[in-house]
Image 1: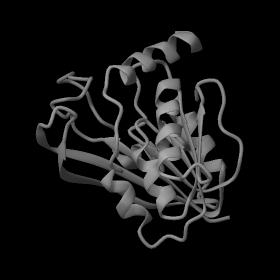
Image 2: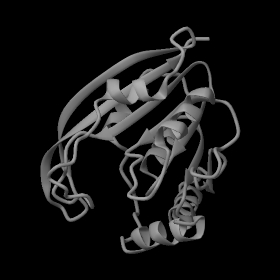
Image 3: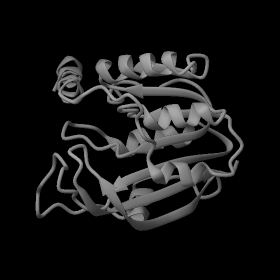
Length: 208
C-alpha cells in the first residue's frame, strides 16, 4: 500500500468517529509518567490526542505524530482550544517512510498496531535511539482482543513484552528493560461497552 493509500485508510477510520471534545489519556501512560520530571516527549500514533493533551497539561513539550491528517488536524484544534499550542506540535508522519527528528526524554507508543505493512520493530528501535540518556520508551500493546477491536481473529497471538524487547535487539550496555509485564483492567469501548482487557507494558530506559 502506498503512502497516499495509508493516509486515506486511516483518515477514513478517524473521520468515521465523532471528533472528541475531551479525549481521555491511556491509563498506562498516566501511571507510567507519574513522578517523572516533564521534558520532551514524542507521541507515536497520537490518535484522538488524549495522551498528548494530558502530557502537555502536566508540563511536557509534546511532538505528536500520526499517519492520519484528520487525527493531526483534530489534535491541533484541541490543543489550540485548550491553550496548549505552545506545548503541542502535531505533525502528519508515515512511520514507514520516516521517523521524526529530535531527542526526547520519553517516547510514547500506545497500541501502535496496524493492518498495513509496518516494520514495527524498526520504528521502535528508532524510538529507542531517539532517547536522551535517562529517557524512556513506553510501549503498550494489546494483550487481548476487546469486543470493539477492529481485529477479531480468534487465532491471533499477542507477543509478550519480553518478546517485543528481544525483537528490538538493543545493546544492554546502552538500554535497560525496566518493566515488562501484562496487566488487566476494565476498559470502555467507543460504543460504551465495558470489558476486561489485557495490556502488555514494556518500558525501556536509555542508560548511556
